[in-house]
Image (cartoon, rainbow, N blue to C red; front, side, top):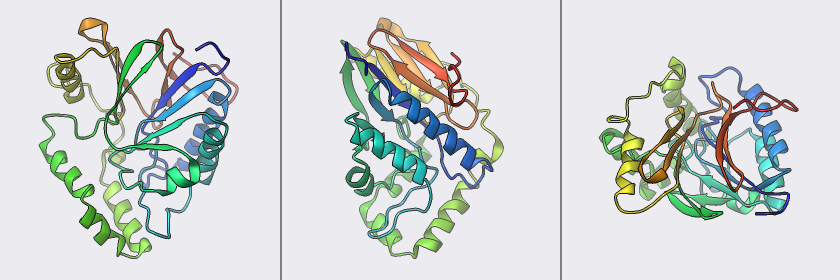
Length: 257
């Protein structure tokens, strides 16, 4: 990559519109300011899941709000910068609206891709923890086409109210101090190590856990968790030679490593 647009950006777990948080407008404005800055040198943007705290598309209805974010993402995609959107456990019900209106590419499972000779394994991370059997069952329910069809029959006012009721019981209501479980118990880290038994990967990049981590693995591989935009305001960037985790301070200010 030799042109001025040479950086690959990764971000996850914005949780826009989270009913458990009282600073949604401020967080969205900060996120949009970040999007506006990175479009200057971005070769691609990877939105790694849970960008929205809740998203369900009915046939003729999409959730109210997020117009600043949606407009900025559309602007980035329209400028020719590829935008990849990974569904997370909070915004799994993305269907055709974001691809058709915004021009993003939707990914519902893990993705392998190479940049500058480096192999990346990308996923939101939900459903990959081998120990999280309860969520494995829940994800099957969330992705069941018949159950999605049934849920779409509910009036949007009631459906969104139910979703927000559920969200208020999530860990967002208890703060985001999610501890690292240790290398022998951290599910996504164990998953990454299992992948390395069969293939070489330079960077595993996940969201979901809301942890800000950059850990070395065997075979010169690295495990990255992108943090979130609730406590960390963090993101990852690959410039063709090195990958870095950074924190965004605000418009016009230098990022914190």
